[in-house]
Image: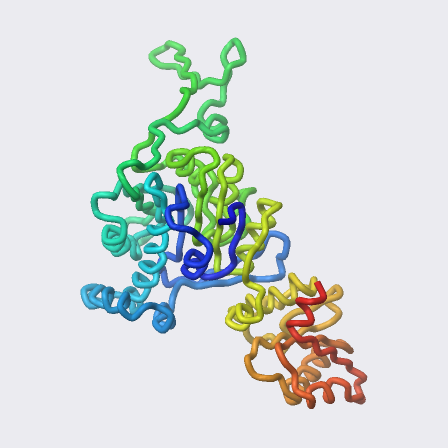
Length: 420
């Protein structure tokens, strides 16, 4: 089993294919929250290219979930009066993946599931079933303060982290090391010998407090702030969590050289912290963009998957466009997802328009002709069109000399992959 690797794909199939039984020491996962929100963010070095995702419309996943699992969860929506459609599909989706997490976790391991009020109570019931009610350890309440206040209710300013052990032999460190960030935040002064401390004047007397060799925690954490929009560590990923949060979890429930798994690794916070704390890691994310963000963040790590022709044909269209235009052709993607005028992006310093077709069917002559019109409207004289297959007539249309002298190069996805 490979470690220190990122897999691009659905964590359900990745875990089944690549991760052995009882091989993981600690699992942290921060899946979609069923918040019914659309997210937009900007990648760290590509401010023009938007990457978006949503955690709504779970109904569309029905066909990909085991029917038996779906039936087991159907009663949830019936009991949630006035609830949103798709909650039982969401729980069924999560159940299949958490069953795999239970399979790969060692007897000495534990799992931390990050969630919030939208579905946390249903996830708790389901995890009791998968991991066993008696293996529940904690519901950590991570409190934070940021902008925004509710007008008609108490403001919701916390997340929940459900913690389960695999058995009674689970790894646990009662005291966790105090991080440099915590020291610098809470011990900002120095005594006469230059040792870091915290000095208070109490009842007219000076009291000096020194850092301890470790710290214990309650199940509510209010000392770890969430990332704000101007935080220097923020990568622009909409659900990014602070490294200090993952540092506490990893130090409490693993040892050096242990294997950490994150099945929804996003921009790679857990992976980055695991590497810094000398743990091995396996990250999985269905988003090619997320995998690239993580790779850029931690350096020398290999991405497995996401580039076979079969995988590319089912990749979301905007992800596919980004992979081809940004990663393979070195260009930028049009930030408009709709109303883009037939231009998916540009290469060569935004002088050559690109259109990509993630179609199973052959791209024909009409599509090439429409792209020619889009190139003219964009004010350029040449363009590149990418597809899996092109008809003979499409090549004839691309080679046709026109009054406006626009030239079009047709490239297959296979050609692009082989050129690199």
